[in-house]
Image 1 (cartoon, rainbow, N blue to C red):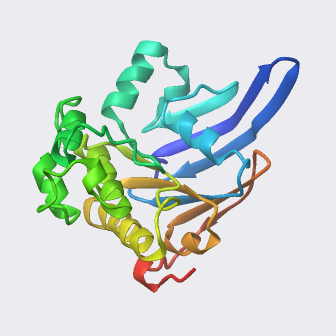
Image 2: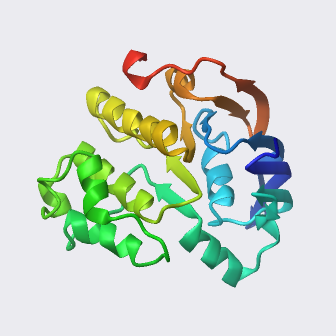
Length: 234
């Protein structure tokens, strides 16, 4: 089976003011369609840099990145913009909702960017916010805001859902509910989901676990029996 996502010897170097930082060094791994891939590592390991390169929000210094066999890393600015617009859903740690728009309007804004969106109202109902969709972000709890952010990312019907520490700003129970929602999207809809985290307990939910340390891949593990989030404790 051909991989859905493939990275080949990806390197990222930041330079400025006489300082040279190697954020990623020769990173190579694959992700199959429909998998949950958990990328684990401590702060500063290179997780967010890797996610931003996958999402077309940062460029690599050398190496190659492929999605469905097409080399994303060879795209120019216009093609990268289209890639971010049509192919990628991004769930941020701190929600990044527009404060003067309701939950429904935040999701509708994303849906308007693409050709084949999923119904914003249906998605908000799916994430348990049918009765909260006309509330503004300030009127929602942290968990509710994160569920709006997930609905917003899903409204684009993306090929790849990228999640940057999606539970980092949430309490334990709310975090578990959000992760269970992401797991259902993968299992029920066949969506490919990448989650970066420093919480090693979350590796139990992944089909594939990529460990990164000091900008290098230390291991790639396939999990034959991923656990439902409800069974994971941390």
